Image (cartoon, rainbow, N blue to C red; front, top):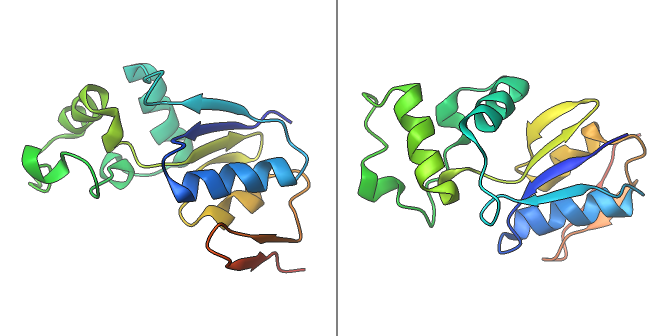
Length: 134
């Protein structure tokens, strides 16, 4: 199964998600989306694949979200997508795509449902142990 992660190595949740994927025996395609920005078509395809609203993909913390006034409900989906394309840091992460679907993996253990052979338990960077229900 192909596993793709849209990853930011500076993000602990993204690092934990990537580690869970690898611990499950997968060799994922890792796309550092801040170095290799998504095209408009790719971003729209990911949003559609996840079945979420455009606003659900916006990241507020550590981004220009407030400075740009993106909390204003008057922003259209197209305008929000343009903001994310202009400022990729606004795209929340990590997003994982497998044959089982696509998901924003916040918290990181949400990735387990997308994997063919997920690990039974995993210890996150902060020491939290995640166990998959039997």
